Image (cartoon, rainbow, N blue to C red; front, top):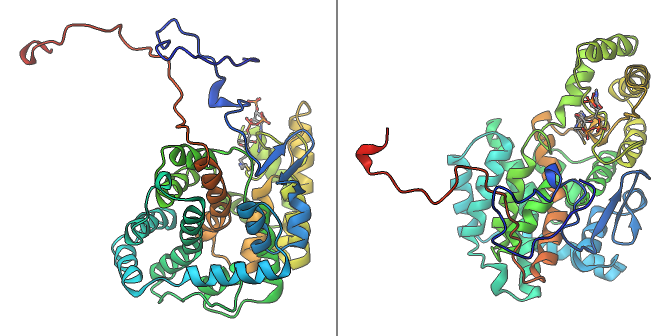
Length: 398
Ligand SMILES: CC(C)(COP(=O)(O)OP(=O)(O)OC[C@H]1O[C@@H](n2cnc3c(N)ncnc32)[C@H](O)[C@@H]1OP(=O)(O)O)[C@@H](O)C(=O)NCCC(=O)NCCS
């Protein structure tokens, strides 16, 4: 549908009520935000008033986080104070840490499942209160306390799964460096930190995607910050959202060498298979995230980056030949896997690493939504048997 009407009559959900929103709510504007937006036709996205790619090129993840959370880029003094606040929030009281560890050990599961279980436990252990009952300052405190634990919890779960002891965060390391440190237990190398930081900056926020919308729906009910984030994590875990960033890397493994990229792509398309890491629901030409990540992968260098660059060009040609009606180009996932792999992030930690960045966007959205004291409560058109019908007695139900 090209136009979307709004029902003011809340009883208007009879079978003859037209569905007034397009499938998937595509293109429907459901909220007002000051956090950012995506302009698909232009291949452009922004956080507040700044081009997100410019921010990723020149700012640390803490600066971008501050921008989203507090509305402006920090001064030198504000940045130092913000870093100190983050480091302080990463340290949990011993009893809270013990509760969290107990749950994490009991719930050893695939990384995203383990993460959401642990964060749910964190909300309980911290005794978080509904955002409805809190002041904006208290909500921000809770948002920070929950967000900073995402890399801590997910790295600990990964290491336990490998039979290794968790590694505690260090106050002298930034958010990106700490993520690598806690995953690997090795001193993070500067160029890896910078590359990962770019990836994190590029994926903090991206319009009203499914997980962000989910976080805002739960925040609109007044629930606590952990409940909002756990719901968003569930949305992110699905393969249509954040659940498949490793698939593009699997494709590169299959391709193996640059000269096999074109025949591989032709074969995929001949069998009507989708090429992972290409195409986008909103970007119609280039995905600006993939452009900077390609540059980052090339800076990191190595055979995988070389293969990816050669394969991208061959796949572009194959897609152009097979789909002359479309411009299907590399999306964020194509180079994200290459960059994360080169930085030492294990493949099963790609989606949790996406959560490490996106939780910063979610929590900013949760705080913004909490200012609007209106519950998000749309309607559905009922299409079952016409009610009311007599309730049959137990013995008459055949
Ligand atoms: C991202 C994606 C789901 C967007 O889907 P969409 O909004 O329906 O995409 P579009 O409207 O631009 O294109 C739809 C058409 O192009 C084709 N197409 C889109 N991406 C394609 C790809 N990566 N490989 C092959 N064909 C593709 C579709 O098969 C479809 O063909 P049809 O019209 O004959 O049914 C889709 O491009 C895709 O599946 N990409 C691969 C998975 C991926 O990389 N996901 C991560 C996204 S960040």
